[in-house]
Image 1 (cartoon, rainbow, N blue to C red):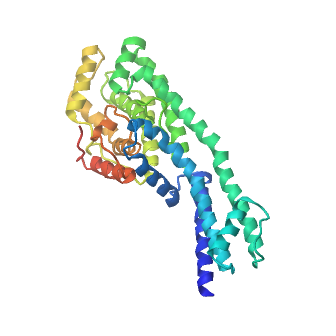
Image 2 (cartoon, helix red, strand yellow):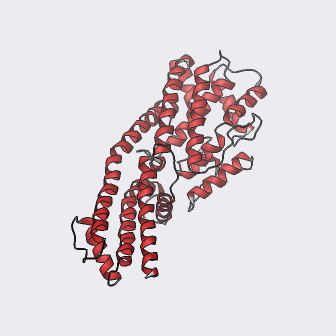
Amino acid sequence: MPGHWLVGILGGALIFAAVFSAIRTFLVPRGVPDRLTAYVFIISRYIFDLPWPGSREQRLAFYAPVSLLMLPIVWLTSLLLGYTGIYWGLGASGWGEAFTISRLSLLYLGSNTMNLPGATEFGFSETVLSLLLAAVLVSYLPTMYSAFSQREANVTGLETRAGSPPSPLKMLRRYYLIQGLDQLAEVWESWQAWFEVVEESHTALQPLVFYRSPQPDRSWVTAAGAVLDAAAIVSSTLDRPRDPQAELCIRAGYLCLDRIARAFRIPYNADPAPTDPISVTHAEYDAVYDQLAATGVPLKTDREQAWCDFAGWRVNYDAALIGLAVLTDAPPAPWSSDRVRRRRFFAAIGEARRVAAAALEGQLDSE
């Protein structure tokens, strides 16, 4: 019957969607958006945004791991329903029989296929695919947690240098008072390598973006922002020889943030003009300039030109940084996650895109 064949074809399409969702999410070594994975994380975000007991930060610590574990459940359910449609299309006596065959074949190789023509082959493929989809997640969990640990090592170490939450002001003052500004080279080299590793891991394994740091006041996004802002101040404001390593660190940083933002379709300007608006105000910059001067840090005397130079560096990563801070609901930190008023972001991706677009247009409301 045509209706049976149509249901079988729709079942095959559902199976195809589940298999390719796993391939795009874990196996393709580049950021390939997948709608099914995105829907799982969005629906999970709605659930975690509900007013459950405990603090919001405590709930969000479970958001990414729980969402990740929901993926194989969704994939296997898609297989179960897809093969149910196929068995019904092959001539099962009813939906109950088709579902029973699919349920047994999902977990048991060689289950009874009720002598339906071609069902034995489909049953074998269902069992194999179910095992493969479960194996994909299990095999990639060590890879994900290795990348997570590597990311968090630098984030944790930054607290010693830049405080918690991280601040470019604290970082520069501490280096000036304790180690000397010449020792900043070690930071730029380390974080340039960090940006390159994070770009690769967080575009290939996008669920990593939502994994939160072990400490509630840390975030990989705010840490990246603090390092980039410190490098931008060094390159624009400090009265010292030009530091090519700091500039390379900035370039590695904005390439990293831009490419992760692109994976989530967060708008950014890939080739901004130095005079384009940024979310940091002139008054905020002046306050940092005055505090550095009070500490004794050597600064360029032409403050206005220094501000223009700082803005020219910041504009490269401003929108992507703000958008990712919203997307990940990063804890408050100067010049990054404090750019927008704290609220519940029920549609995290859509809100991140809106905020990033507002930052590009210079219409972002800061607290």
